Length: 506
Ligand SMILES: C[S@@+](CC[C@H](N)C(=O)[O-])C[C@H]1O[C@@H](n2cnc3c(N)ncnc32)[C@H](O)[C@@H]1O
Image (cartoon, rainbow, N blue to C red):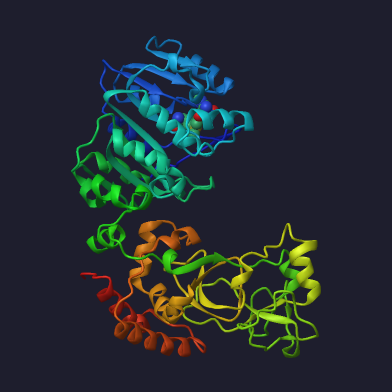
């Protein structure tokens, strides 16, 4: 039976790890002994300390806790334990003089906790290579520094340090001076009823030893629930191993990101000198009116949002071809509503079902009167030809054509540079392929396709003959998509082509 997990939040943005499976796994990983010293930099209710005792260890423990009330409770709780020292101090601001070394560190640090501007300034100075707004990385960095040689730390933290740009400094520090033993990844929904803004969590174990060049470590994933985590302390762990990451490979990845991939072709293409989408195309987010209820209309075929959005009349739609002369200062007359490509996972072609008010008055509102709310951004790409990728995908990434229409802010618009315009259909095919989906999910494990991740995808351009073959197939699928949805089975030809282009060995 799975024990209920309680993850409580207090005014210090504190989520406590009240889950036996997680605490027992983490303390198991820590490899405690009696004659050692352990640091708990943000002890909360002392859940890890309790687990250490429960597992029969009695080491020297130093616990820090910033919240005075929690700290008093901790002091009361452990007053009969002469080996536990509790301090009401800000761990991140410990003066160098007071930073001792410990054999072990265990923590569930605060994630993205609020800092006053003054404290943030101080932290920026203390941690110049880190992103000072994200507290968990500061706790990890400082704790690594406070490990004795060969000492070990175990942290439960969001998985964003694996790939996000802002954590490059942290990744490089770990790679240069420390050895990662393992990383286990699981969804934050393992903590029911708590939404703390992170999709994935991880438990990482690190030792204070410089790794040799050939070092690699396992990534565990695919747990059905929390009760499976302690399996990682047994022989069953192989079942959850999705890949081994090598330091050598990570060093070669852009911004030393930890791309999780068990497939060789992915590591090879990411580490290769292939062009990226960002090199060949402009990748930008689209337009927002600031008040869609007022400025957006739907066609009669749309069945959602019927209360919020009025139905458009055919004579209100402007039918001009804008691509040569985009109407960036608005349109005169009654027919001043323009088609806009919106989010939603439909492949190859989205018929025009949504229309934006593009009258001179409306433009004045977007650009001047309501400019704080509206987003009149990247307007040089409005009414151009390109590719629309929804910012958030359902299961797989999808893409459709932007054929001289407006595109909204839930879309990432991909516009091949002038010399690559002829590749538009080829790139549209690529964005609907399994190959592209695997690459973006490797670059960023969440279902978020923000422009920054899309830019990093390697884009291989094959011979003109192959480009033509793919483009013809895409043209056919665009035709089909205008009247119906494209199903996975209809993507066979596209998938086969890109498997060959990217050297995927099935
Ligand atoms: C996420 S909770 C975790 C508590 C405990 N380790 C657990 O897993 O249940 C983080 C704790 O860190 C404390 N905290 C926040 N900022 C701190 C700081 N700068 N120094 C020390 N403790 C801090 C909070 O008050 C909170 O109790």
